[in-house]
Amino acid sequence: MEYLNVGKIVNTHGIRGEVRVISLTDFPEERYQKGATLLLFKEGMPPLSLTVASHRRHKNFDLLTFEGYPNINDVQNFRDGILKVNKEDLANLEEDEYYYHQIIGLTVLDENKQEIGKIKEILSPGANDVWVVQRKGKKDALIPYIASVVTEIDLDNGVVNVELPEGLIDDEN
Image (cartoon, rainbow, N blue to C red; front, side, top):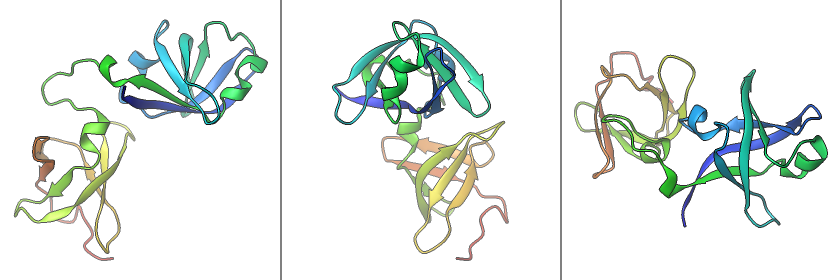
């Protein structure tokens, strides 16, 4: 089976079994809803199936509790574990919606079909996602995922076509 990362447990929170998660998912409200099943992968442990009992946002973290783990002592050894979901459990997306794992690794081409680089990360700072594009011999480029910039996503050929407004990318090292 193939699994996709949903979040990383970075610490406990309080004494009632809450864990602090840095989210790696595009759909936290779906992945962390009460009753959702996540798999905890941690070195030295077999994968552990966990059922979400509660979820809330706190600062930049998602706070989760799991059924059957009511206090801090029950969840302390979950720290540094990765929460995953079975790839087969992915929801169907609307047209023009994509999972992060589909976008990361794609080659970005400008309007002249010149390669800019490869998408290495996706940031979600606010209104729209920002793609971090790794360029050869230059600083990473930040490209906003908006219709006026991203003109086509071709998953079959592994490329993204963009039209860059002047000054969006600094061509210096």
